[in-house]
Length: 104
Image (tube, rainbow, N blue to C red; front, side, top):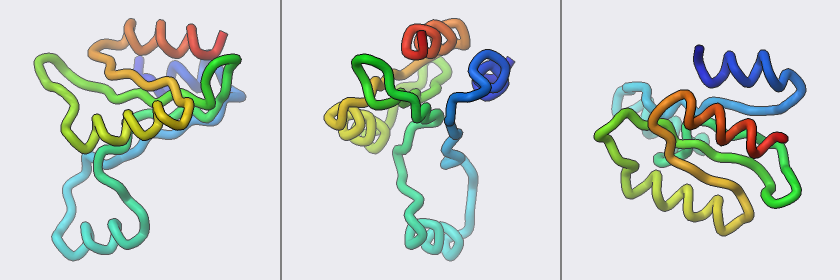
C-alpha cells in the first residue's frame, strides 16, 4: 500500500500532498518550474494537520542505504524550526507509525 492510499483510507478528512520533485525535466522546463516556486529538497509527503505539539508533519521517504540530500536536510530543518514534525523514513511500517502517532 502506498502512503497516499493509506492516508486516503485511514484519514479521509486530512489534507496532505505528495511533492513530485523526483521527475526529470529539460533545463528550460526546470527553470520555468523554479520560477513558479518548485523548490529542491521539499519532503515527499506534507500533512497539513496540526496536533497538540506540531503544526504539521513532513516526511522524506528513502530506500536504504540512501540518505537525505543537503537540500532535503535544510528544508526539514526549516520546517522543524517552524514547529513541524519532520522525519526521514525507510519503510512503510515506519511511515504508518509516524502518521498514526501524529494524527491520534
